[in-house]
Image 1 (cartoon, rainbow, N blue to C red):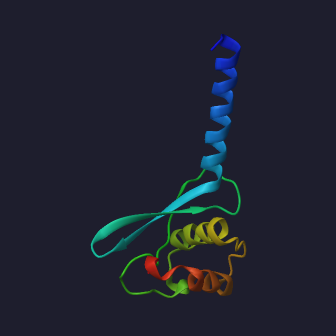
Image 2 (cartoon, rainbow, N blue to C red):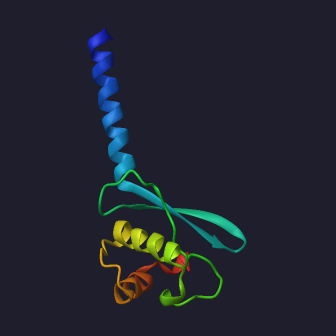
Image 3 (tube, one colour):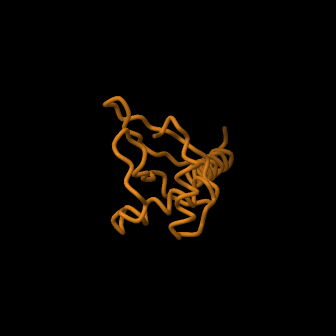
Length: 105
């Protein structure tokens, strides 16, 4: 492979990697005393790949109103990028919570 083609291949590979990172995310769930990683396709591009879902465990479900402001903000980000719910109101986050797959709860 001649030098210009190597550079072109490197640039194309880097572009593909950025697109994959921008549209792929994951969330950890804590079930059966194990940490499981679940990947998903994001609705909006972002370089953030790890998201937080406070309901992805076998523990007690706390109402959304009782989440700390930081947990609520992280959950709102997760809802935006996983399900496309951009509203941060309690009602919208309840809809998001209902859409979380059963295997993550």
